[in-house]
Structure formats: structure tokens, C-alpha cells
Image (cartoon, rainbow, N blue to C red; front, top):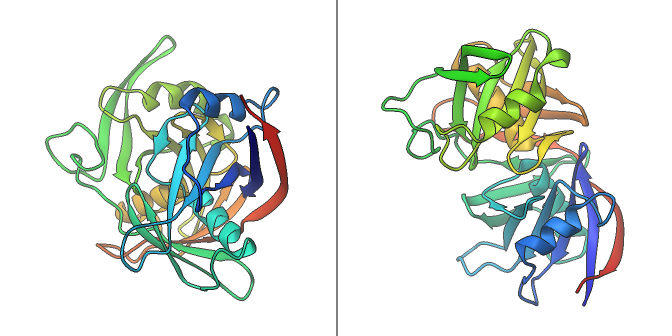
Length: 281
């Protein structure tokens, strides 16, 4: 079977996008894993699927699969690439589109500088809804770390941007233990559905640097929902003031959150790299 794909990226967070508005999506978890391999497949952080939605006044359905083949709820950088894809492929002529995801409906549009703005919805702090095992809701939680060379309690923020995130504030972003501590926390028993782990360095109240260890992937060059989660956690703890510029390894995003139940607004670029076909068994 020949698979047609489009390779895209949002500030270095890379994807392949598949149009299944007229055909069912049938790739298995094993096949997704194979396609994600950067030497033996196409290579990507996530696979994005464009489908039609059955919901009233919703334009598309958007599905996201990690390198390990697991389907996840949300991806901010992927959402911007989704918007660029459906516009470039003339799947819609609308400027403001509504998209169904596993975590709810989001809205997307584009400004005059071709930056794509995504209404990511309101952040979730209720531990049961994140999900995170805790009897009470707090701005910060203490978690026990038991690595071979690190046994201590660390303070983290925990919230959901449609997918679960924990955020650690660090003094030196370049020396942050993203690989080891990120992998440890990703599968910590306090997170029943695993978690994305952000390492945030505060530069000024309007500017942070961020690295993210994404569940099912590892460290990526950028994470849109991770940027949203980091900024929200900083504003919630009175460390940041909206709007905030978020610098990641692959580029920058602008995040705006006005607190309480207001939606988080994310703005940034989306780039199409190339299209291709691959034969799959």
C-alpha cells in the first residue's frame, strides 16, 4: 500500500500529516512506530491525522499519535501545522476553523504576519482531571525522586492543557537533567496516564526558556502545550506576567493567559517541508 504524507514542523517539533477526510485511518501502532524511525522510516515526533468531524459547527477532527504509536489528546505545535495543512490543501476556505480533538474542540486562525493563533482552551488544575494522584489541588506539589544519583524531594507544578504536564523551575536550563529526570517523571506512579515534563528557566516576567521531555517521544525541539503549561504555571505562582515569550530549542512561541477560566492563546509559525509517498506492507 502506498501512503502519501506531508512532512511539517512547528519550530522544530516535526510531524507527518495524513489526509483521511475521505478514507478511514487504519495504521497499526506497530506501523506508526516503524514510520517514526529516523533511519528506517520517515522520522517524526508525532503523526497527525486529518479527519471529518460529526460534531455540529466543527470543521475537522484532529488525531495525534506519538512515536511509540500511542494516541494522545493534544499537541499545540501540531495544531498549527494542522491549520496550515488544511488551508494549503484547500480543504477549507474558512479563516477561523473549529477542530475536534480527544480533549475537546479548539479554534485556530492566522494573523497578517502568517502566524497561527490557537485557542487552547482553559487550563485544568483539578488533579482528578489531569490526571494526577493528589487529595488536594495546589499550585506546587512535592514529588519524591529516587534515581541512582539523585534522591530528594522536588517541587513541581502540575496541570493539563488537554494533556498532562508537570513543570520544574530550574536555574540553568542547559544543565537541566531533561533526559534522566524527564524519563523518570514521565512514568511516575503519581501520573496514571504518564506526563510531559517541562524544565523552565525564568529570564524575565515576560520571557522564559524551556525544554520539554514529551511522553512517548523523549526531548523534542519544541512543545506547544508544554509552552502553554509552563507559562500558566508561572503566572499561577506570580512568577510571570502575560504575555510571555517562550524560547525553546527549535524557536519561539508567544503565550497569553489572562488567568482563571480564560483560554490560553498560543501564537507561532508552521512550516511545510516536503511531500512524499512510501510503500508500507
